[in-house]
Image (cartoon, rainbow, N blue to C red; front, side, top):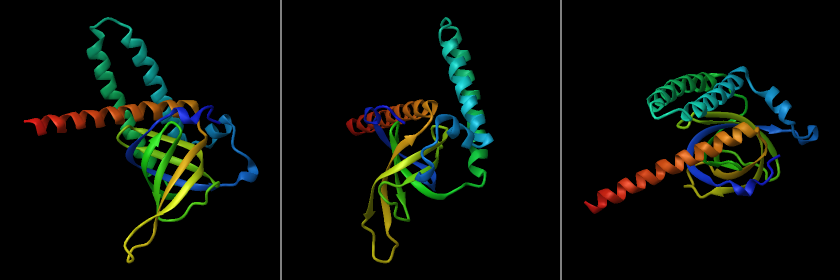
Length: 198
């Protein structure tokens, strides 16, 4: 369980997620059980990202000459992460695909072509391409409302899902990714303001 999920903020971002209903009769999985549910590819990506983070942290403590090495290793690790994530998402996905539009350390917001029942739990595979994050977690639906669409289109649903069981490393990845997305948004906003002033 997440100790204080309200302490995390969310950022708007498009991503893919795959949802499968979770039978609450079996209870929420423990952290070890959640790890066992991960595919080999997902475990590999998680391990690689964890090793990268530790190595880069140690290299940052070296003198200024290490900056070029750190930047090069970041580029190399990003290439590996991108390949692993691509391979992961090309695997046969369990569940129904939905479009994510907001994420943070406490949950996700999605647009779905089908209604989700408030209170229901779902196993979710989440893929944030731009930030090279892939994870598995259990979410609970806390809100699901229809989006007004034209009469000739099927109803879409805007749903909020809160993490009920997620690995600590994955929360850390989501928090880092949300900070990176926010930083990019601020940079883009500043560039737009600078253009308008010219």
